[in-house]
Image 1 (cartoon, rainbow, N blue to C red):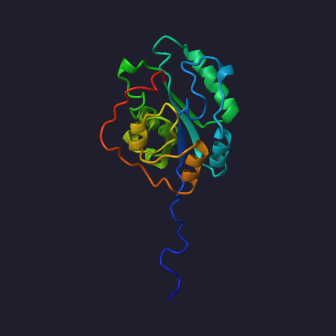
Image 2 (spheres, helix red, strand yellow; image 1 turned 90 degrees about the vertical axis):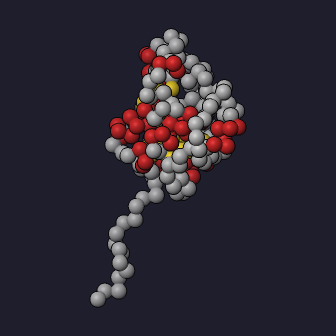
Image 3 (spheres, rainbow, N blue to C red; image 1 turned 90 degrees about the horizontal axis):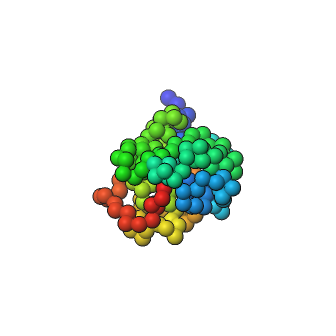
Length: 206
């Protein structure tokens, strides 16, 4: 009888997620309300490095973003596409883009904190939502992740409410630190948020 341990030779499940889905404004680039000008796209410090770390490990990347300026009549869809193309040129290529253009009162299933953008991105990537991590800067990003069955990492900014930080399943001081958490296996899986959240301010224009 071989002394080989039972299960030897079997590959352990990868601790890495299949994909990381990023919020756009305030997470990857500076948050310019209702921006329709590609020239105003400025990547946040560390964004390019964080994305390079993921891609080097074979983790796919996507963007999931609320763009209510379209529904509010403040932006044309073409402007959003041009801004996204600029983000892709500076930080991409991203494997998938998913955008909610609807007004907050439209009652759609895609506007974060609803899970639609995360679920759609996961389908397009061909992966289970539970194999995805969502990184964003406000509570609705974390709520959308939890509702979709994905994990979430909050990277707070000056517009992030203290209650959103307190409620986040996990947080990081900056984008590079968030990605290192993911790559180091410190994001074990989706965690349910403890009850409904109310966002009293901030994040409004998205």
